[in-house]
Length: 295
Image 1: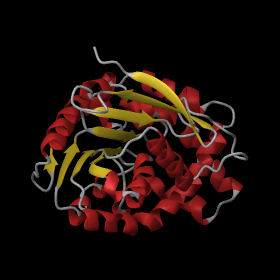
Image 2 (image 1 turned 90 degrees about the vertical axis):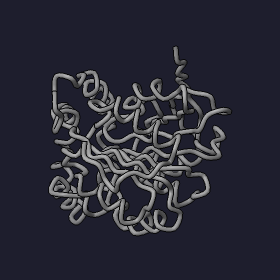
Image 3 (image 1 turned 180 degrees about the horizontal axis):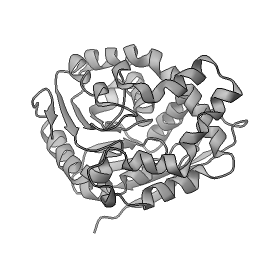
Image 4 (image 1 turned 135 degrees about the vertical axis):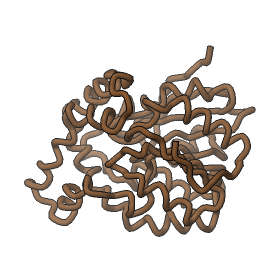
């Protein structure tokens, strides 16, 4: 049986919860960075599935999961700051080199780390993690409106994304078999979103997401300059980060394998076994496949 450690560490005065499994000294490390509205909980199944071959570390950002949740007047909830916290976390637990798994919010957090420490990144695993304008479609119009006019009316219009209905939708939209998706996912995530003060945290991050778009060219420069081997596994029915955001990775990366999977935003929930197989094969061989594969 795989032993998963559920641990905490203090980073800049914040308690950071993380899940860890595998042999740090004998196997390659994968740093798993979660999306919204979830936490390291999204990796609960692939961690034990990969821990015989890899050392896996999955932290919760401040304001998410079981990490500290300081109020917005005591903590700057920006992607720059989240990346700074994760960077210090990585340093404190002694990760020298690792493959980077990014999903949703994990992409802007992780790509900031990659640009800052390119020497640490052995490979990329990209699961519905955006770095190209092509991936931001119609879904983003209410957020773009708020970015351009940050008033209370436009802010309040985004609160619909923080409801149980919206959280459930993120897990079930675009899947092949809705009955296969455990309701534990959205019930767990919503219980954390519903904590007093968490809505304001998420609304601050909704607003700050605009800070990521000007960095896309910088991240793409990183891809072109350092050419990390990359496995892209993308739920092709996702409309939050559409499949149009997956294909451009092949413009900038030479050793890239792109799999467009017939599922939604949280691809691990329906295609976890396939993704585990793809990760194992890719990271153990770095073998280049066809430019993109639809499954």
